[in-house]
Length: 133
Picture (cartoon, rainbow, N blue to C red):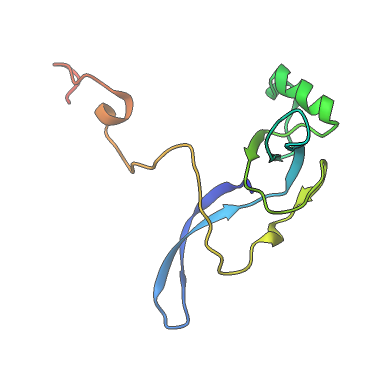
């Protein structure tokens, strides 16, 4: 399942304890391609696309050809998952209802947050004599 981080907040359990949570918009994921060992791929996997609002000029030409070959709409992000337990076909939408309230999920992200940093750490400034740092 592909999603977008919306922010962080806290929720309170029944005893009144604050629990930090990350709010993720796990949007509608469309199955772009299904790979199997019986086909020419040689392994089982599912390609999911996220955010169908992609404009054509924002998608690379190779990806446009991939979407055209599969007959699916353009998406902003495509990821492939090998361990996919749902039985889906190409063009199906994977709903967010695969999660139950209270489920824990493993999250993979692009970057690790480092908080508010100075220019030396953030942009690799040299700290020369007239940069005051």
